[in-house]
Length: 173
Image 1 (cartoon, rainbow, N blue to C red):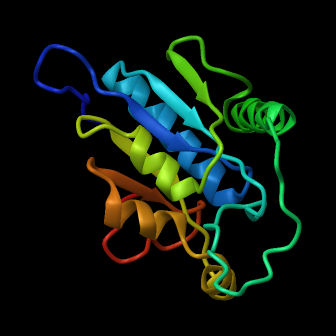
Image 2 (image 1 turned 180 degrees about the vertical axis):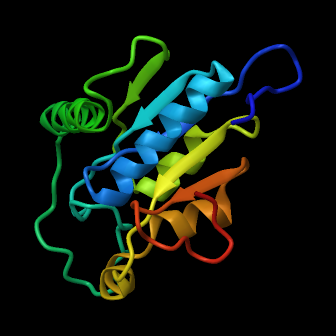
């Protein structure tokens, strides 16, 4: 695996979208490998938001007038805590815990996953996201974080499928 360097003497970050789906765990495993090889910081991101689907997907904007109850105050402390727990559990599932040989930062912002990831990943970073096969209906309803990231990121994007899956056309594994 090649070292990931900005050419300015510092390694770029590896930003990874984390969830506990097979594709999300495969992405985390791959991101750890990239960070190790390039001696890069690994930024593990799990966004949250009211109305977001549990496993990936993007929040669709409703166009009708009935948006349901209005939330006037919500600090999200419980959602951030749950997101951090999910990240820790994903590291445990993938590598037995947070690796000692990689600098890891957790980010648990509120927001649409694709938008959050593409805003966090700078031009000299690499962004790693997972994808799932045979999820056409879910993508139709919720959208695809990996497609959004590939279309909008300012940096290289690596889309990782679960072991045994064929990669999507135009993606890396």
